Length: 124
Image 1 (cartoon, rainbow, N blue to C red):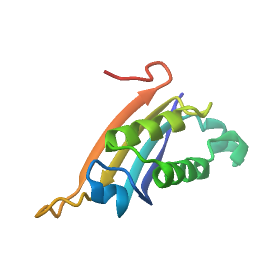
Image 2: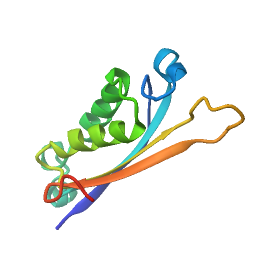
Image 3: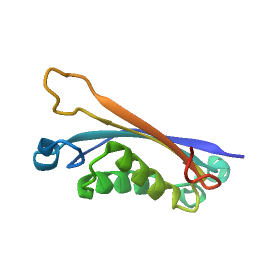
Image 4: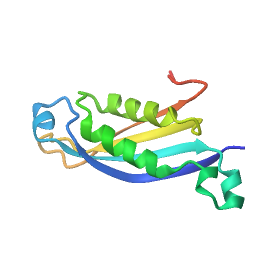
């Protein structure tokens, strides 16, 4: 049986973007991630060793944002998804990356979402 861990609002400052300002000045990114894991044993044992330690995922997301220099937020989402999926206990991930690009007269945000699994690491 698969159970789910939700990470919401993981924020970090990074330099990913197509616009020159994004690469020089940087911007905040926010990530929501859904991880399919099996924590049935932990639900009974109350032992961290019987589940996925989501502190690792939070640190990996923050580090990836802080150290990546991609042009596209899609690439950042794919990199985060691949990194989280590389953990043996995670069988599927959905990663949503949100940013507030420096586009004149645009006060909103832009987000992309990607889902990857161990059986289909590249969804079409």
